[in-house]
Every structure is written in structure tokens, then in C-alpha cells.
Image 1: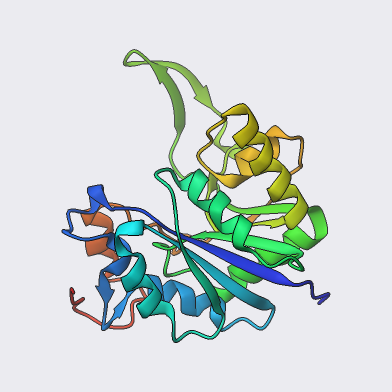
Image 2: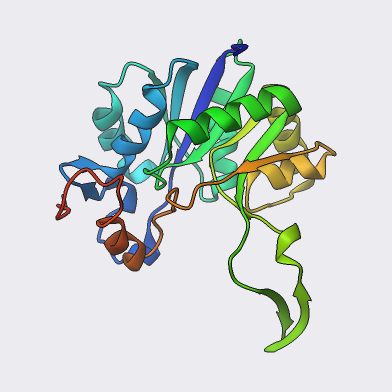
Length: 234
């Protein structure tokens, strides 16, 4: 495999209002370890990952620095912004100058596999931009004002996951353009699409779930990747 210098931005700035927890959900413990640490370790254990940048909510920045400081590949832990996109932009500014590939991952996807990370990395190397996507199992419909307006062909639709991988210059250009024109998108690949980049889709992973709600967190306790049951809290 051709190796290019790789930086990982872990977006850990969410406050977790939908989780039902009294603290940010990335600090919830699966087994005896915070979700954030489980996620970081998945990337730290991969040989082609050179550095990890953590973008934290400012309210828990000091705690996050202390929590992540013992992981050698975590080079910087910085404060994010109110929106995820702006937080990733701050993380991108902190990436090392010699980085060639940048992976962006949600802190609350702790079950990401090394195979998926590798596929996204290789896809970004080959195509410039790559995301993992799942073909939906359910019928997908558009609706407006409570009524269906169109039934979509689910064979042409994917549900985007993270990590999303990019050649650094593509991601920088995408974020710079969005900031200049005050454009907000829901993920980084949408920003890349907006500037004309072709985004390759690799197979996603059904176990690579995003822990968003209290229900998600409860379900996570039964996932194969969960190191211990029952889960503990801070």
C-alpha cells in the first residue's frame, strides 16, 4: 500500500443535548473508558495515522486535554466552535503542514473498524475524496407539508458515515470557500462536492453507528465492539 502522511481530526465538540446525559455524550463510559478514548484508540492503533487532532467543546477542553494527553498520536487538543463545520475548520488549521491525507471522524462513532478506516484512507489517496456509505434498507421518500412528494430509488442513495477522507488541499479549499460564502453543510463531503470534487463512496459498516440519543447509547451496550457490560458513567 502506498503510504501518505495522514492526519485525523476527531470532532468532539458536541454538547449532547439529545443524549439525555448531564454531560457531553463523548464522555460517557463504555466499560471503564470514555467513548472518546475508544474512538481515539481505533485511529492511534493504525500505522499510517501520523497525528490526531481533537476538537473539543470549550467547556470540557481542560478535561479532554487531560483525558487524551497520554495517547502519543494525539498532537493537539483545541477548542471548537458552535457548529460542527466550524469546529472541523479549526481542526484543519491545526493539522501539520506536511499532511497529505486528512480523515474527519465523529467522536461518538467508537465502533469504527480498522478495515473501514483503511478503505477510506485508500479511497482518498486514489480519488481525492472518499466517504463510507450504507445503502438504505427502507424505502426512501421525499415529503413536504406532511405529504409524500416523491419515492426515491434507494439503489442510488447512500447514508453517509465517517470517517470521511480527503487530500488535504481539497478539504482546505472546500472549507475556505464555505467560510468565504457563508455556506453551511451537514458534512465535509458536501463542502467538497460544492467546489467540484468527485467523492468516491466505499462500503460503510452497519456497526459504525453514531451515538446521538439516549436510545443509541442504550443500544450500544449490546454491540460487539462494546468492551464491557454494563456501561458505567462518570
